[in-house]
Length: 94
Image (cartoon, rainbow, N blue to C red; front, top):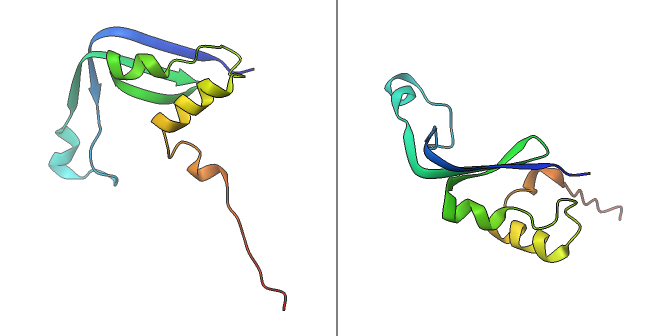
């Protein structure tokens, strides 16, 4: 069973969004602030952070996450979310 929690109407959310690498030195002080923020976590993992109007449509309509249309909307909004789940290996035995 999937569990989701959403935090809506946060006046400000402080984020570390930035380069896709470890921050060093003065970069550690660079913070982002999201006004009228929201956060969505599903099964203990943060799936979305941003402005409320951007996060709210990603909240699953069905708590059990069994509706395929809900999954389609979620995966369209988060195209890389399952990237690390699958690895395919191909071998030529000829």
